[in-house]
Amino acid sequence: MANLISSTISHINHVLKQFQVKRFLAVALIGFVLLTTNVAPQNSSKAITNKINEIVHQDDSERPKTTGEWNKEARETEDAPGERIQRIGKQSAEAVKDFGSVYPDTAERSANAEQ
Image 1 (cartoon, helix red, strand yellow):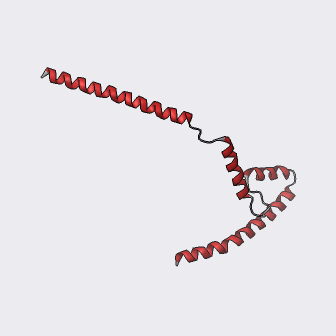
Image 2 (cartoon, rainbow, N blue to C red):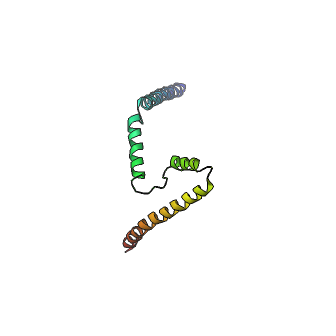
Image 3 (tube, helix red, strand yellow):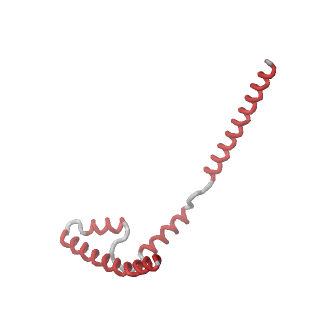
């Protein structure tokens, strides 16, 4: 009986040691893969940025479209509140015009989708 208990404990210890070695090897392999994989190469990141800028600036509107453009415009008109208000009014009119040109198409497509 003592021999059976001893052999069972020995077998369990052996399995646990093998499991820990396997776990260590798995963690080491995953770490190696993560550290050696180049997730975002610099040149493809720049290409994606350029593509997004092209898409953002494809219409003829002169309104600022990026945060950098908004901040640049705000710095340009920092000391001229009248000019800033005038630009805001002009840009708001352009935005409404752009939205008005998109809305009928969207409404038509939505109505067709419901039928």
